[in-house]
Image (cartoon, rainbow, N blue to C red; front, side):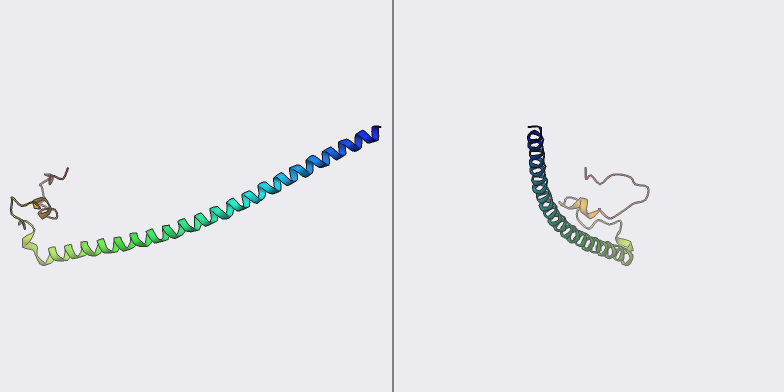
Length: 112
């Protein structure tokens, strides 16, 4: 009788070990799939990041080119920095003086 009880305990123990093993195996499979899914997301994000960095670089180059053009224009037209290109009553009067700078004048352009 004692052997039968011990054998029954052993069967229950082995049964619970196998059940736990199967649970862990299933969990491992789910986690492996999660890793695969996350790796795919990471690759997509890396691709998006590379594209955005490329766009940012292109925009930076274009803005740099615009600034170079403005600086070159200012060098070739030194007398035009204080003149207004647009009449006083015109809609774009703030933009006309956007790049003109008068030393000692800290008055804002009105772009609040």
